[in-house]
Image (tube, rainbow, N blue to C red; front, side):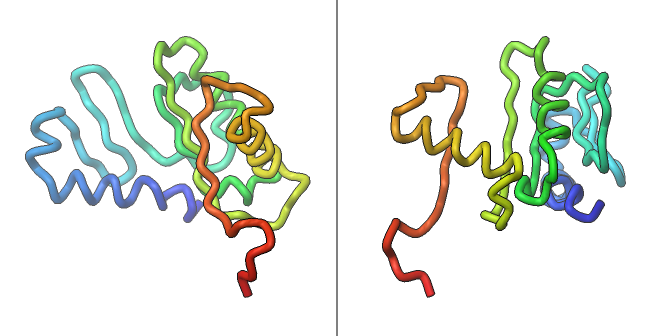
Length: 136
């Protein structure tokens, strides 16, 4: 539950400290979400498995290496199907599970970056030490 707030909390604080931003975009800042009454848009942390039915424009999956399955990622991605310009972010540190969905995504990004598997819908960055570098 705590991790779900790590993306929302700074965004909420930014809006609370920048009245010009909230006024310009008509954002209402609440304890557990931010919303725009004008069009019903909202930004809120999702805790646990959100289930089907949401249709996000944007989803941020934080610390993806801690996810045992790709259920949340897939639910958000499939929910974006009706959106013209959906945006999915997966933010993570490396972790240690080479059998999990995060490592699968890492492999996909590496294949895209080295050109072996073209993917115009994927933008990925991996910050790591170079092969053979002493990082100890």
